[in-house]
Length: 436
Image 1 (cartoon, rainbow, N blue to C red):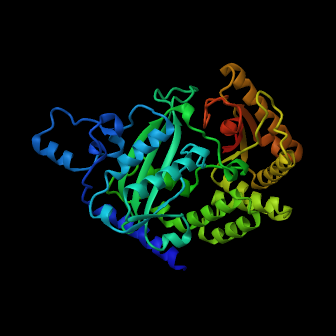
Image 2 (image 1 turned 90 degrees about the vertical axis):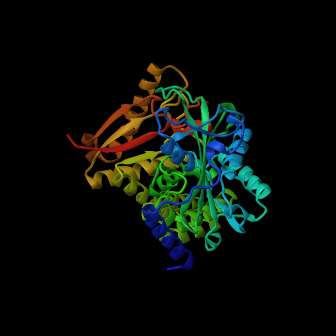
Image 3 (image 1 turned 120 degrees about the horizontal axis):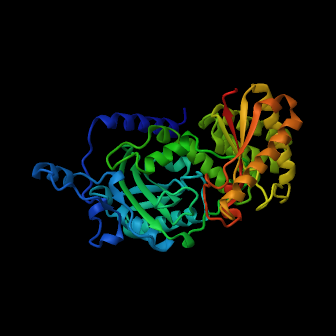
């Protein structure tokens, strides 16, 4: 096993062991980071009937993540600055004064697991803020080499939300979650929540995520989100699954950076290096191998990578494919070689579905443009088009498929812009269901 892999696995074990012993709270909590209530997240007040002893004990511990209340939305850059300063204000001595490297595992949209234009900007802004506030901390790129030094690790999410939690209602803010983890102990040392205004955020996915044929929240992404949001508190261990997969996560990040820079051959080599470090069904590795093989002209290898994507989806009983439609139509996007790729995707899915002898529900989706009634009908029509294409390819599937449409009720972005920002809202999903 490589040194960085054994180091991270050891940290995962430490994280599990840490559950048994409480950690001392940081000197400053999210509730007391600044004197201005609207400048950072605040904790909900304690019940009036609480005894003095209980109240003192509660005041001594950091606020629970579930108690943090985000302030009113502000412009994106201001929200990031507010959240970053609130997070760093929680860091107790001697951590703040120690010489430590800090890495940022690229921030993501918690609905899709994708990096976006704004999550990338947030990472850059937070890196600059860390360097300005703590001269002893050195911000380094997130790579396999940087993990060897057991650095501080900053993670975060930027996700469209609706305060009313109403179905089929456009988001009214983007929620910011930030979490700081000390990889020497595997513990969460600070958490912060904030909100940005909708029109100041650009949720367009970065090139790798925009190009990838499929997505879903695999174990690595779920571990990231669980560590970042309400499932951990200050003093808790980070998600052990996430910590154990950090070497693979770093290798994938190196590959994604090369892919985004147009260095396809280099990215392909790095995805191959990431493969033995990652789970067999790691979607980012499989997506990366498909994309780079396709662009390098290795069609057979691209098909093999896509087959594994299909196998992983069928095993998880859910395979979302980015079979993206023209706005308001049942015709696929005709951009570049997408029609050729779509034919291969459907052919491979039909073959795998027929061989696995499963029943599949084809679910169509639309963006939030237009009326709910029309979107419901359009999404079903899209699902029926795809179902007929699969049945034409493999007649054995015809009696084992059903089609349905959910309109925009399961929108992941929900902005209704009908462009790259909300492209995933015009998708088709394949769900394994019980055969009747």
